[in-house]
Length: 263
Length: 263
Image (tube, rainbow over all chains, first blue to last red; front, side, top):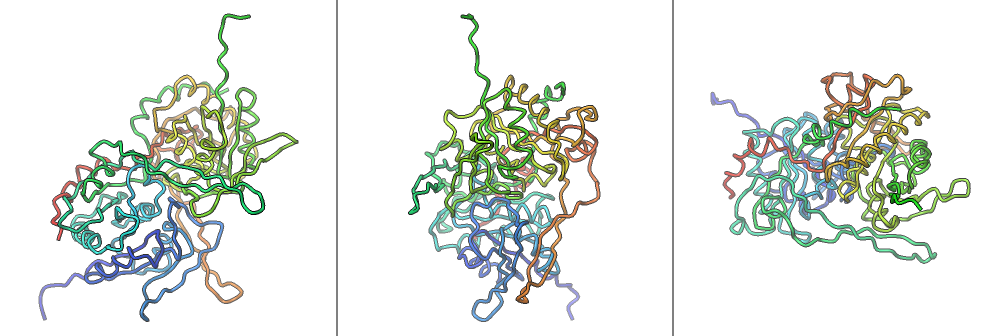
């Protein structure tokens, strides 16, 4: 018998907001599954733009999902944040060591991050004490997730050795190109890029007005040191994310408000 | 004719996440309506814990809501963030000068803020260039919103003279007590208070498992300088809120990740 103790590889919980049948999630299962015990708890259906929503007024249902006769994971009738909570409280025992949310089809950069179910799942994981990562690919139509999944695997190795600070998660965006064309990794702040909203007014067959809400891609106008700009330039971008929404500079700037006379 | 030019009072857009028929919203209409032109665009039904969700896969419908024969506002089949976007793009012309979201029944303090539709509406307003405030009362059952609405009116007067910094909104929490018992106003950071989640497992009449997600109030364990602690102590708390989720200290601490070798 060897005198070396063998440390089992950390188990990884996977979730997403594109739904449990999405290709981006499957690619993580395939690539990370070679070296780690994997568990999947993901929304049963697509949940894009749900932000950090929780399901409180409806019951949650959990369904075992099989692929090729094997248990693939649990499909939940809720949001990504619901999935993380119910995974850690009810489904996954003992708790996983890491959480990865993704790989999302489409980037999550700039202000758009606040609408992202993908990022919210990672924030939720960080709140619950897991080293957590949200991963998105810079394309709305790729089926080539394997390069991105391999980059995630590299980041997992690094974060096992050096976990993230408590409460901080990592928002990872990956260019949709072969590894040889990726320029490197940049740790950057969230930029101010956001979709401009557009409402399309229509009339239904019963003569009632309704609106479709859509996003328009604005012209690029970003500082070069932001997530959006560096991703477009071919870098993998990493943005550390907090759940503390306080705008600290304003704590001094707005001090005059404390002097208000209440009448 | 007087030589003084008369500046019309700024118009105020009101929204909430408890729905357009909620008492807290009505109290703002009553109190602020005495001195400002008011417009209401709010969810038709309760939208608690929807966070910053947007409605993209369903159409949005808008209904005129009348009270006592007068137009009270627009009821929208969507989330608070949807309401702000559609108000500014389709419904309210010219744009309002301020946005107030609330008064929410129940506090929005600590980490719970990230789940709050009330706060998200204010964040959305700030993103769209309005001086914006989210207002919540520290009670789940009060019907006495008038004191809170008067405090909001005082804050509105101050913010008309000194608008908030661009992109920053104000999260306001008000004790549920008479003005004489309110100790003052404190500008504070978001604390780490959060509900602990609990899942209640049940069996439906068809023998299927389902879960109710609920929150449990944890024992108080907060630093005394946070929103949660000061609100409980009887202060109106004001927290400046940003949409930039970057955890800046980690931008240097995690620099080693940029050195990863991609293979």
